Amino acid sequence: MTGAPGTVLVFGASGYVGSHLVPALVARGRRVRAAARQRKVLEARGWTGVELVEADALVPQTLDAALRGVDTAYYLVHSMAAGKRFGDLDRQAASNFATAAARCGVRHVVYLGGLVPRDADSEHLVSRKETGDRLRDGPVPVTEIRAGIIVGPGSAAYEVMRDLVFHLPFMVTPRWVQSRSSPIAIANLIEYLIRVADLPQARGRILDAGGPEYLSYEQMMRQFGEVVGRRPRILRVPVLSPRLSSYWLGLITTVPARVGRALIGGLRHDIPASDAELRALVPQRLLPFREAVAAALDAERSNTVAARWTEGAFMYRGFRHDHAYYAKKASGSAVTPAPPEAVWKVLATMGGDTGYFHLDVLWRLRAWIDWAAGGAGLSRGRRHPTELRLGDVIDYWTVLAIEPPRRLTLHFGMRAPGTGVLEFEVEPRPEGTTITETAYWHPAGFWGLLYWYALVPFHLFIFRGMTRAIARRAVDVAGDPPPRST
Image 1 (cartoon, helix red, strand yellow):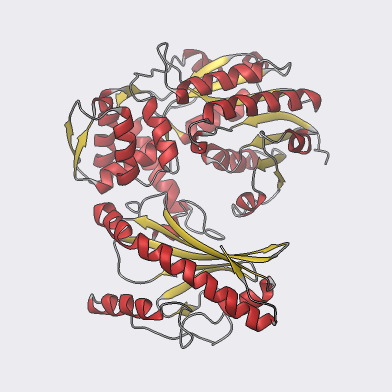
Image 2: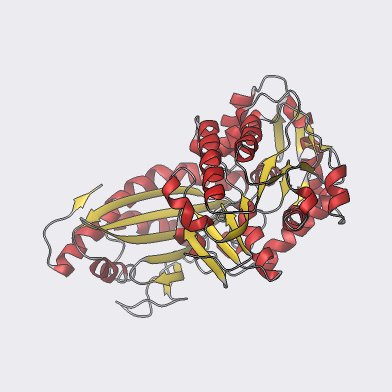
């Protein structure tokens, strides 16, 4: 693989900042190569004119294909979701990347790190700093942009605030809500990232990026509430340690638990941004927090169509800002020796007279409950008994995305405090085919969370049985021996 002259690599393109940076670079006429550990995640973005490549900084042999022919490489990788050893993983990944960048002739690396206070002792903050150090150990010039809270849909810290404001009318919070930071709008951060790459005087420098205000987390939550018409009541108590706070956030918010724990570790500190240098290099109007929140909500409204389910897609959240960005998830899977085409033939008959393959009585009971609440639960039937197309209604489901024989995405149509998607993935394996059924639930407020926690044990039980039943039926369709299940 050889990049055209001037190719820009966005390494970590499937993440929050990368998903904004790639289209912004394309809009400015740049040749963009996007890299992530899973190509299918990038394909789901629906980008046009972007070269996609699968690469993992912890697997050095995958890096040359991503870096060859690249002038500027954006390094946007972190491992917070990996658990306890994420700091070690971050350091190793950065060392591998720096070595490969030098070997492939990359001219400039732009790294997005985090603001680091002098007394930082959390692994989250320290690892961001040490990642930059490892990148600078290589010979390729590095520009490090350090940012704190990023205001935009999908930013973990922003989504924690969104969930707290919408989920809890009354909050008992620890003292860390008084810690202050300089939140920056995602549009301002993207502008900084794009423009510093073209400035020779920015190479080799560490530059803080922040917004125009220095606010506490409590102030940010109150201002967010004002923008969305909520008035959160906040009571501060001294008893919630960062560890207890992380468990509490895991229950109350939908932000992935490991990411939440990593974030909480840094919230004991005030984290100002000394951004005079960067403001001088890249002049722009910085959005105050209220305007940044309003811009984030407008951005969601303008991106209403997704090719298939992706985390936070507005259409899969019922076009509602109070439905959580991140989804709660439950899944089950089975393996069958039948080919994907046979599995798809079974999936395509779901609902209507066929039913749902396993414990159909529970599906019918849920439909009766919905009907009693004034919903569409007893609306049974489908357009065709064996064929599916986009927009089809299957009982109380709507086909939102369909990719035969690999993927089927259905929108949940019953009354509930939130928005749900049910997705089937059919993946060929050397031993046959894996069928995975996953429910994604975007809760609306406290009642949406309670609804999820009440039903998730049933989901796990039903999905395991349902995928096994589909596997057995696929064998009958294909005429193969009995399936093995997982």
